[in-house]
Each structure stands twice: as structure tokens, then as C-alpha cells.
Amino acid sequence: MRRKSKWIITGSLLLAAAMLAGGCSQPGAGRAGAEGVQEVASGEREPGTGADEGNGAMQEGADTDKAGEIAGEAEKDAGSTGEDALRPDGLPVQMPAFTTTDLAGNEVTESIFGEKDLTVLNIWGTFCSPCIREMPELGEWAKELPENVQLVGLVVDIEGEDDTVHKELAGEITDKAGADFTHLLVNMDFAPVMGQVVGVPTTLFIDGDGKIVGDPIVGVNVGGYKKFVEDYLSEQ
Amino acid sequence: MSSKGDHGQGASERDGVRDGGGAPASGRYRNRAGALLLAAACGFVLYGLFRGEAAIVLNKAVNICLECIGLG
Amino acid sequence: MKMKHALRRKLVQIAAFGFSNIHLTNFRGGRIYQGKWKQFCNPGLNCYSCPAAGLSCPIGALQAVGGSMNFQFSFYVAGFLLAVGALFGRAVCGWVCPFGLFQELLHKIPSPKWKLPGWMRYLKYGILLVFVILLPVAATDYMGMGKPAFCQFICPAGTLEGGLPLLGTHPELRQSIGALFFLKAAVLVITLGGCVFAYRFFCRVMCPLGAIYGLMNRVSFFRLEVDPSKCINCGKCARECGMEVDPVRTPDCAECIRCGDCARACPAGAIRLGFGRRYSGKKG
Image (cartoon, each protein chain N blue to C red):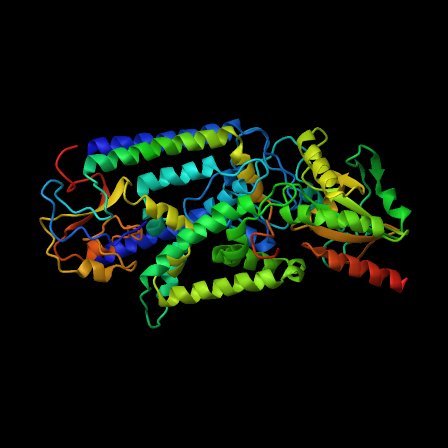
């Protein structure tokens, strides 16, 4: 009986040690999750403590010095000035000003919205299987869009400027899918929007002035995106 | 698989008890099998960690998987 | 003694449920925990899309790695499950699984109580094989990512703990409610109903995790033993068993969740649950 207990204790300790070792050696699992673009602790093994806020966009995840909680920033700015006015669903009325690069490496700012009457912004992530599955259809649709409408992607699981892993993966996905429209890489500038995004894919519709029009479509629904575009254009 | 394996009502003289399941499970055999399984399991865990599976598990768990909860 | 045992197990189950779902404040904002603990798996069944969940679901994790682009099989999660099973067998189900507790509570709702036909217990092995192991590897898209088929099409725990709370707190998700959701809702209703009428219906018929642990009942360190010198073959233990196991004939049955109700019912005190063997033969 005593021998048995020793085995069990040894086994359990081995298992525990294995898990600890694994936790320590994990390369930065920092992730800009679709949700509020949350940062999970990268590199260091800091399991989140029991205390969690969970109010609105603030989320658990051991902080590091990495560019803080994007969603937290959204909380701070919300409703402070006229420019940051919010829609009833929590999204900002106006798309925030941003500067980022796309997958091809070109710099893009919010002026991209002014180029067309309507922009369909498809927010997606490389971890998201349904997003990947709708990508070929989006690629085709992008080519068929009328002159005054554009399709733009926004990749959410890019963990910073140096994250080549996810950039490459996103590039591979768009290549294989034939979705060669512009794909923006998310960063902190998008906080006011990302704080309201629950899951991906989420598709927003933005007019030529940068205002979000209509309701966001959450989940795969290419038919829904197309319908909105048709209806919107016919109302103009 | 489970078995309503019928090992009879009487106790086998050698083992002292009827161990259900149809296995020649004397205590020692059983313990060795268990220990072996545990050792193999630890090996699996280490190998899995080594090839970065924990990151995949984490990734899937922290991003709301609409697919997983029935919203396609 | 009677009351004590049943209560003790309930308390352990409740504690386990609490530890599994510790981030209760997440319900308000409809967010999920995103910290590092989720790289570890809960030994029991608890959806990781549940706002309060602090660990990963092992079945979800199996599908996640199996369905990932570079791997077909998860050594990490399988190893974890084998280790837990080698130590405890299906005792996890009986003492620690949050969904198991939920089912037991459902069964307390007054209703006619039914036994289940024997063949139903084999369904869960089929579900394990097809939905948890094979489909994530087989049903892949052009990038090699597979569907988490059990989570997607079946798991009622996910619908209940993840789907419903998130739909409740996020109106924008409701537009995505389609045929799939109705399928899962139907599975959930059947499961809930089944649990009211039949003890631990999901555990016995559908749970892939129980299928895995059950297979290791025969070698697990934590075991159920019947002392042959005390047993009077009265059959009370078998009648008491909610999982319809006969502890005297098949103590290592893959259906036994080591809850100890049989030991409690035995008038001769012949049943023992614990580590190590006392009755299975003399020395080593």
C-alpha cells in the first residue's frame, strides 16, 4: 500500500513538472484575440491570477510591457469627445484614425475609406476556421464589386510589428484563397472598434466619410454582406 | 470496452477475487500496466509540449470559437 | 455514515465545479477568460467558451490540435488524459466533472426514472472516434484546418455553458443563429431531458471523455474492490448503482464512475474504493 502511494505521488509530480516545464518553455503565446484584441502574456509564464475584472472589455491575462490592453484604451476614450461618439451598439460612429500596414507592406491610413463610397471591412483571424473558409468566396466577390465599392480585410491576430509568423500565415491564406484584396494588420489604433468585436469573422460597412453604416454582420454570411451592399447602393 | 464479462460467481483460488473485465488482472499485472501507462502518458505530454501543442490549445481556448458554440 | 458519504462527494463536486468556472464576473460583460491557464486542460468536461471557465476543455483541445494545420493528433492532451485515467480511471467523472454534477442535479427532478438499454453505452465510443478524433483530421479546408466536429455539432455542455451565455450578452451574435444552432439546441434538450429520466444520460451514452477514462478503469490506481470474504452476494450494490454496474461481477466496468454509492449500500461493508489493492491477490 505504501509502495502504491509512492508511485502515485511520483507520477503526479512528474505530470505536474511536465506541465510546468511546458508552460515555461512556450514561446510567446501573446495573442491579439479577436475579442477586444486582448494581450495574453507573452514569453513569461505568468498564469493569470484569480482576480479578474471582466467588466466590459477589460480582461484577464498577465500583463507584460507589451502595448497594454487595446480594449482598455477603448474604455478610456469612449464618449469623451464628439469625435468618439458611440453608436447604440457600442461601436464608434466614426472609424478611428489609424496608420498601419497591409499584408503587402504598404502603409495605409483611414483615408482608404475616402477612396470609395462604401467599404466592406471583413475582420478575420488566422486561427478562425470559418473565416478561412469564406475567404475564397470573398476573393471572388472582391473582383466583382462595382467601381465605387471595395472589400478590405483586417487581420486581428498580429501580435505587433515583428510578428512574422502570423503575417506569413495570413499571407499564405490569402494567396491560397485567391483573396488578393487589401488586408490591414490590426494595431492599437483600432481599439475603439476591436473592443466591440466579440468574435470573427465580423464584417463592418463603412461609407466614404469613414462612418460605420448599417449593422455589423457577425459570423460567415457572404450572402448577407452582398445583400447589404446591394441595398445600400440602391438607396443612394 | 466495458464488459459484463462473466467471470463466474466464485472467487478464483489464485487471485482471491474476481476481477471483472475479462483480464487476467492479478494485482501485480494491473499495477505494472498502470505504471506503464502513466509513464507513457508523461512521455506523450512532454512530446506534445515540445512540439508546441500547448500554444494551439491556448489559442483555441481564448478566442471565442463561434463554430464551437453552435453559431457556425 | 450514509448521509456523510453522499454529501461529501457532492461537496467535492461543487468545489470542482467552482474551480473549473471561477471567472464568474465574465458573465456580465460576456467575455471569456484569456489568460495563460487555458493552455492547461480541465480533467472534466467544461466548455472553454464558457465565460467563467479557467481551463481548457480536454475534448475541445483534442479537436483543436487534431484539426490544426500541422498536427493530426495531440500527444499533449492525450497524454494528460491517459495520465489522469491511469491514476483515477473514471473517478474523475464521479467526483470532479462539472457537467457530471449538473446531470446528477437534473436527475433529482421528480419524474419517472428509466434504465437504459445496454447497447446505448457503446454510442459514446463511436462519438469519440468519429467526432473527436477522425473528423477534425478528415474534414479539412484548403489550409488543412479541420472542424472541431464534436464541439460544433454535438456538445451540449458547449451550447449550455458557452453558447447561451454569449448569446445572452451579445445581441449581435443572434443573427448567426441558424440551422446549426437549432441542431445543437435539440441535442441539448434531448440531453437535459435524458438526464432527468435516466441517471447521467450524457455520461453513459454520449460523453467521449467518459469513454476515454472508462477504458482505463481496469488499470487505474484508484480502484473499486470487493472483499470476497465479506460479500454475501445480496445484490444490493448492483441495485444501488446509478450507472447500472454490478460491482461484484465487474468492478472494473468502464461504466463505473467510482462514486461509492455501492460501498455505502453494502450491508457487509465489503466494497472498498481507494488506491492500492487489498484483496486482489496476496503479494506483488
